[in-house]
Length: 338
Ligand code: FE
Image (tube, rainbow, N blue to C red; front, side, top):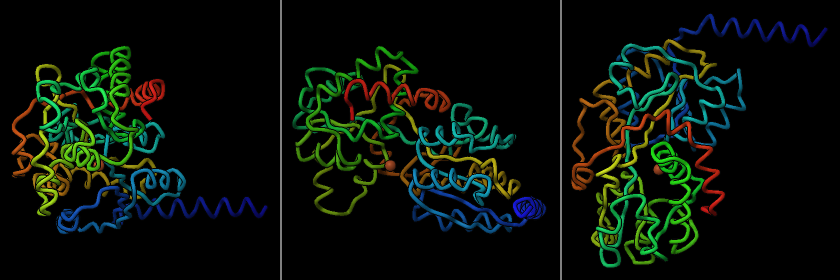
């Protein structure tokens, strides 16, 4: 009996909260935190009168938190980085489909799904030591498996979303057998076991501990913009290659997010997603992390990124990246790319 009345109380509370669903509030769970955030969020509040409550945390922790909060989660929007993580949130059934004409018009089709959207892009590039590796030997991801590079390749972990997504794109384009061959070749070329992040790899390449690595562009840009004399020196030692330029183009990944199925403020949530596709928000979103806006017509001036030259970007739909995540992990496990 006691339990039954407790249940009734809960359902009344749920009703009450959905009745106030249109409170001018947005609960944002974000794994992105940059200097441009203040302006990005303040402008939304200014334009809509909707106040943003921000919960910030690490990508996997936030996802775990939303999962654990279940139907009681106050989260309206989950923002995170990499298609691998967005795909995981989708697979867990956390996102609600959003039908927005505005998002459909603003965001290129390959950068959106029915329930999560990309708001900025980054590429995964090849970084090599100019004294140890010839640029013509590292023009494509497939070159990283060439025995010529034995003992020269360094990387962060194979279980990391950035590498899983790259592998997923190779599976999508060339099939599992080719992808496995590449992964196996990369492992055979390791200078050391995978450790550290992309920045660590670039630095190891610069000091000659490794000859070549792969990195997201914003880590390269961050180091190129560094004012620390030692980092400026390091970056003089490395070259950056846009991979697969005569093939599918450089692997592109994204930052993005979606509205949660249990969002208490769905109207605010859709407005926020739409706001993120506006010219102004796109600029803040991209600039915050040395990325490119997802909306084609929005341009940013980033001298570090521009110094890398023009490139052909892979237009593989982010949905396909999501599709091959688990296959990518199986391949890495099989070849010992830890
Ligand atoms: Fe990162």
